[in-house]
Image (cartoon, rainbow, N blue to C red):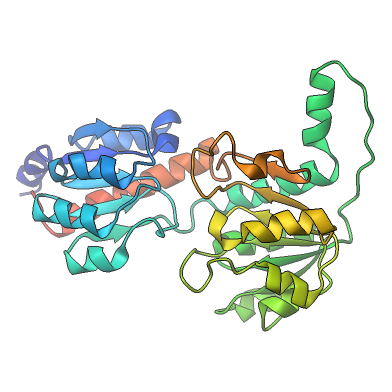
Length: 325
């Protein structure tokens, strides 16, 4: 029976759009290739208009941050689409209500990239405070300008969102001598107590007295622009460094621009942009005090392999469990 089922699976047509998955060698490629799927690859993230042209061809997707709107999902479900396996954690680019409405299963890969993303938070923090990004460009053109940086030990960091990445960030920063406090609407108080992390009951109270805030929330209607100009004015932040490795729209652009202009913000370090790849003329790019990396927080060999294996297993398990051919 199992042998016949696998023969049926060899007829399944799968689309892979994650460039991290495709560009990084590892066991995730071996696992995907061993399934016998008919596999197409496109370099995502794909826009709605691109997906609408091809979605009717596929039984399953392993995707990046493609635009899975209701129109796309409806067209896919009307034909062969059964499952969308997100390579990664965030599902804000997928219309989950539409997926449920049209019977398309959506899966993701929580708990596999927290070490890589938390380490990237630390890399951004240290690079910014020690001017590594500036000094690299200075010496690259043959100059020798010795900028003065800051130590981070003893600074207070607020972790906004205590999922797996937030927890890992809290542990790492506490271990190197930062004072850590955290806020999450659904706080894991047992974890906070075990790790001696101060908890607060609101974003406003989290921001009070901070040197750094690191954001680790999903993007939804409730969290969009959660860090905004009105909030920063209300709290009265001073020389705050914002680090965002989650989603661009969690932070209001105007708050960054005005905060850097008036000195209430020390800087903005981000691994995520509102549109990716970033527009080469994006206004954030030329602001002093901004450090941008191109969504590489989880792009380590170790994390890519873990996420890739999880994404393939999620896809395959759903097809197996539902005997889809």
